[in-house]
Amino acid sequence: MSQRIKTSSLYYALLAIFLLGAALTNPSPEKHRKAVKDRLEHYLTQYTEQSTQKTSQNTWEKLGKSLGASLGFALMEPLVHEVVQRENFVVFSLTKVDWDGKSNTIGIGLFGKVFLSPKIDDTLQKMMEKAS
Image (cartoon, rainbow, N blue to C red):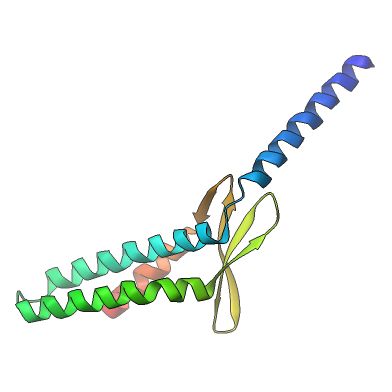
């Protein structure tokens, strides 16, 4: 009986350490926003490079696309700050995007990291193909 109590006590102690570690390293709202912003910047850069390569070598056209990309990067920060929210559950958190009156969960934060759904990549890829 005493061995059984020691085993269950060890189990509960490890669980408490795990939960405390998760709670202490739960990502901040800014970390969630940064993860989304980094993903968007990656796709905006990729789209700009692809569209520049597909078009003519006209210097003015390239300059226009570069200015457009710069404007996109400048507008991205306030947009992400406005629409990306974190829902906190103490030991983990969810990345949510509020758009058109709807709230969609797009990621999860756990142990200091934010993991975004691969569906974001699919959606951004479709948007890039549509814009091309």
